[in-house]
Length: 276
Image 1 (cartoon, rainbow, N blue to C red):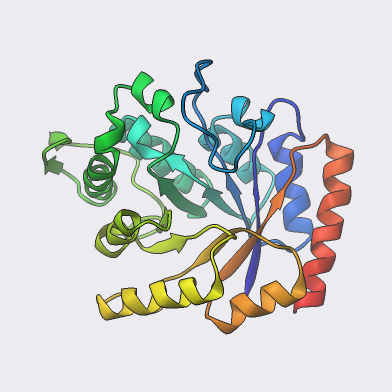
Image 2: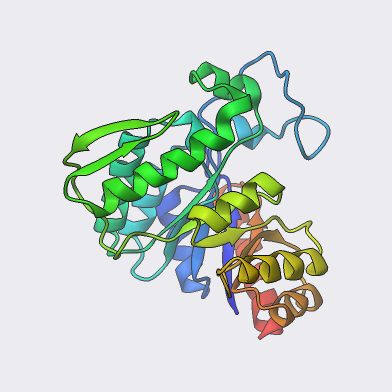
């Protein structure tokens, strides 16, 4: 099994370049960066984790910029978005940013996407929260067209793309793998329709992950690559994920200054060594 890190890169923590280098030196195969464009002060949407919204949510760097900085200091580290809030984004600009990162990194992008939970945040982008799921499904179809077709075109209920040239194309063929976040029925239907991999959160039980993977196999998607987002960092839990066929686990790295971050990474690297 593979091991990665999930984290929030902000203006208050370790810079992305040194972080990427430190991850690769310690044998982690991947990093997944969170995204929020902004946090409206009204705070109408409750934080899914309960309690106050953590400070890091207010301060995330743009994931494509941060991952490009990490690409410049590494050679093999896979560069993941965990997750891009696609319904809040222009799909054409996102296709270009993602393809540019994949090209410059030599095909190392793992494109994790999700529908989001902060309704006032998405409304500020002109997105109706009630329609964000169907919108994202169409965006993914359009994104694949922009990545793979010389003259891309897509027409749906929410997304219309006239026949267009869009360069660069990603380095990886046919395109970077699209990992769908979320565990709801709608999210899993979207995964079955347009996803390449699944990014469930660490609170999901082994039995539920096994059930979902079996259901995907029944729908013609056997052995869907599964990366657990923010798993508990202990060998017993890791072994449980390995037993049910999980491809990769990521451990949540707190956002701290460089010295504290490196100490924490050393601790997590020891968990990896005990789990092998």
